[in-house]
Length: 243
Image (cartoon, rainbow, N blue to C red):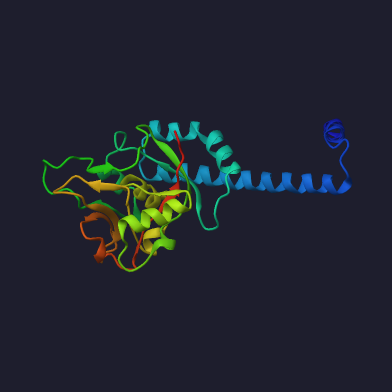
């Protein structure tokens, strides 16, 4: 043990060669901050995987996420994560788990969610058409804002997208708002709109999530955004994703 400590000290002496005491203190302080931040991000990653496990996510999907841990945490460490934003979220693509099955993973006080988009057996099982390109494989999104900053009376779709884009973000898709609801308590605060998707039924309809009067999380869609009051938020994320 003592020899290990001695070797570590000698290594640090070489690393700090030529630095003033103040610079050494700054380097050590920054290194501690990065170590603490990495530990927090690793803990968040592990917690999200555990949530998926308790919600019935297939092991093969969880394994894909687990394999990405080092890359996801490293990317998040290099980013400026905004205050109150979620550093990253795992998103399960519809070809791996259907929208219907993913809604059962959204819980409110142990009440499982449901999908009210389907009207009959002829309706596609995966009803979203996305307005941004997303991977076919399960992926991660970063720097996620839960929609609190865009709550207002009657959101205008183009104005909201322009507002979000100014900050270098994009609105979430339908499947991404489900991921947000799985891994956070956002629905206890406000409804959320998936502004970068529309539902393939009788024209363009924007998907949204809310808690029903019975306490059940529900996926629905709206044709008229002017009916969406201050109880609706429009979540967004960093433009980049990671498979």
